[in-house]
Length: 404
Ligand code: PMP
Image (cartoon, protein in one colour):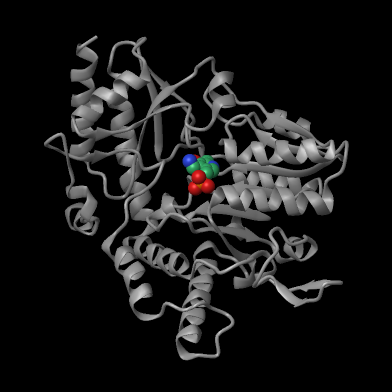
């Protein structure tokens, strides 16, 4: 049984008041709040095993190393990776995608080659590929969307060709909430001999992710969007690809032997992990994943879907309301507009009622432009939001709309 009141007790920040009103936090696609278990783990790490890892002969360093590597194994299990060495720690999704664009790009992408992305990508899954294209003379090809905000799969098929070197698409859109048909995308790409990167930033907290079932060659996500701290993230990569890719950053940890003439590199995953790793963040991320697994990914998804449906129906009932993105399969995020009220005004006035939503282009300017928009209002849901909060959000919206 999904005991929402008990769950909310795990998140101290939810007791915050904003302008004397209880906080209703509906900006979860931007970042999630942290449960006590995660907060405690951060403190426990610094209190009980803080030491630099992988190189110390002393006890504390060995404990820290063990905890960090246990976290890696835990994350590997969570996402269904075959081996923990396929789990690389990064600072987040953005760094993970840049790592692949730089390193895979250096190994495999040349002038005239093509990278396929889609119209609904976050800037962090656009700009790294543009940088690569500028460096190499490769070209970006962009999958169109249908009216409903789903990928146009016929167009995708038509873009795949012998020049395609990589496909990089979001699992879930941070603006439209669209869940992309990843298995279909990877099957088509693999038939053409092309690997696929999946940006899982908006998926990881909302449903079970199994990288092998998805057929992802690379999968990226950020800890902070899955109830873990900022500054830690994951790049999953299939061993066969990671082995063929050169290091990204140079420094300590990633080397086997250094001389001024020639340096040799460490084995996976360390080859890609230069510098002192975030062993506090990695262990806190593992605790966050334990936390959501404890509640049950299916139960979380069912709960959030109910909130998303309620909010969607509620907003549709407003005269002149427009839901931005009406894909058949959606998760997490709900973008909308009401009449010609500017989303920024909606957001600012809702804030006065203690209700936190996001407004703007959501780091997906080309997507908004393709829809003839420059901003939306976005409510996004997490495991701790309640039906009462959705009702209050809708009532708040009614009050705000009546001011115009
Ligand atoms: N991709 C998507 C789909 C996102 O929603 C975000 C965060 N808004 C990112 C990538 C970037 O994540 P981060 O800023 O944590 O690196």
